[in-house]
Image (cartoon, rainbow, N blue to C red; front, side, top):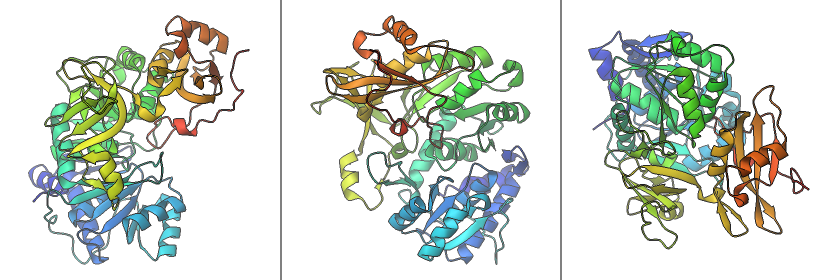
Length: 499
């Protein structure tokens, strides 16, 4: 039976000197990584952690995260990975809901975990630099696990209520990692880099697990900073880099003469986590001579459901085609299958779809039926199976009876030469029900009035789609992955309107 830690033992035997994990200050080969994981797994076992136990892991994107993560996998535990910015209240909720009795916390992020461990009488393991662990005996080899064993438990952001624990199985993890070795055409001799948070499904499942399964080199950067990211791509001779839209946007606008000369080995960039404006894709390719391939997925699909895999036609405005053995259909408002090109809710079925929500049968039944996951996203399929995500169903703006999809308006805003970032939201309105509002970040040194921007938008969009309300901010609120948090945008009723 497989274990997600198995590949580390395999590569440590077949290619012990091959670089496995790298950061700007650390390089560990597969033999070293295996020894560290085996020792840390022995340490966890010595503390009473065994198969099925939930272990909270609170750590940034550092090599030590991987050691603790694969050690938990090796002993058969369920890793519950949390944002390093989680508050004691947030950690306590997850610990209580998951029934976890153990916390592994990075030394620089341990304060909140220590408070929760003390309050709930939980076992706390501090993860220090180097991830060296004292143990009676290192683990000889990972324990056997069943395909449908829950391997990780990832809590959703809770935008529509209390966070839910998404159960992802051993089979889910292997399915995504195996698929992306093919999707990225990634070889064991190649080097992969990212500044994504590893506690998130994208960085953890699509990136880290894929590279470890393939036996390649995985470089991590924490925190993300554009110049440091470009330096890592250059110095580590990165072949494939992964990120979210805000990261690509920062790289496109970084000051200096950075260009193809700084990333001669880079052949591919993989994007996910949020919709990527077409203009950002074009600008990145113009500046770095590298193509961004966009994909789509949710925590509930182990981070992936479709992708613009290497070697197929790239269709701007879409997120590629379904992964192998995966089905994607569009459900119309009446519950039937929508015709080609019609907008409806995206449904996904396949090996990456979750087992269900942890101890929440009602939520599982609402979102998962006969293997089909109701994503809550609006999209459409073309005749060749390319998926276009129109928006989140909950973000749809209905202005005077007309549907306005924020992403469509944002795409146009991003094409303006003075605009760096934009978010479009619906604001309650007595006359129209909802009014279209835009929060815009301008490029440094640029000036633009709301009237000027609105006049330009009227040349690109139907009148009802043009934001009546426009505000300019220095930055947009973002989550740990760099995703723009629309729910954190506040708007007063009389703000930004024209007379």
